[in-house]
Amino acid sequence: MKKHGTDSTICHALTVDVEDYFQVSGFENRVLRKQWDQYESRVEANTDRLLSSFDLHEVRGTFFVLGWVAERYPALVKRIAKAGHEIASHGYWHRLVYDISEEEFARDLVDSKDAIHNACGVETTAYRAPSFSIVEKSLWALDILIEHGFTQDSSIFPISGHDRYGIADAKREIHVIERRSGSIEEFPPSLAHVMGVKVPVGGGYFRLLPQALTSMAIAKIENERRPAMFYIHPWEVDPQQPRVDDIGRMNRFRHYVGLASTQSKLSRLISNHKFGTVADSIRSHWGDGRKPQLAPDSNTVAV
Image (cartoon, rainbow, N blue to C red; front, side, top):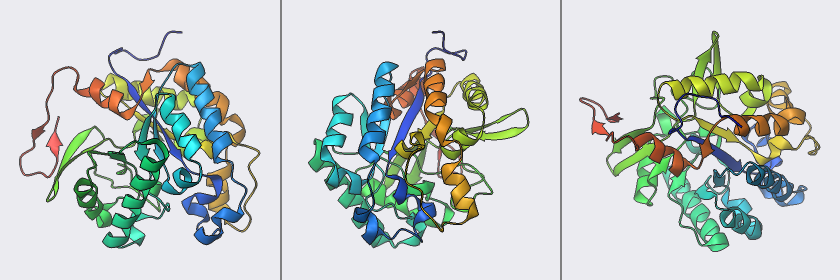
């Protein structure tokens, strides 16, 4: 099938945040972490559903695995790695970075690395914060990531108006951030303006909006000669998941909208665009010989 877009050298990033339906940030005041083991887990079956779909379409992606999941379901993490996908960290307890101390964040990070390594033998070097919670007041997390050997991050959402995440003036393209501890490559979640509509690429936005809008957003980003970052969660392809009560109207809408159609929309999306791992996507971005150079009077690197 012919892929949409204009530049066949650009590979967009296909990413999965491996967490269960009851672990989302919108439920944390209703579902306590000490209760997680009491809930019916569906993360294995739902992740296997994604693995089967990706295998059918012969595409590989990056799986940001929650340490809690890796510790309890090591066979799942092994299956992901054996299928040729990239393994990355999503932290251990799915705690918002700006709600914890630097020491707690470092402990959570180490615990996630250990759980993933014990499950599949991979030393993770890429990270995504729960709910993209590296924001202006939690940029200190980048220093801790660097200190623990991480070279890539995908946590800084260049968006405004969201109650949990976003840095409005953050760079939208892949760039290098210089910190006191060193440097780290940032691959932000993507968004584009399509027909006057702001279209973030993935997650609840993908479930809510027509699939054609997401495809148009990816094509627009590709026309700017850079890759897009698409993200999804295993529970988003599970319309039969148990419902959690007393979560508030907004959280209910965010979590349950569009679940029934997500699997089919995802199949169409990965058929229509060239996708790969975060590493593949970054290589496609720098593959034309461009090298990052330090921007004057800036803590980021220009491309």
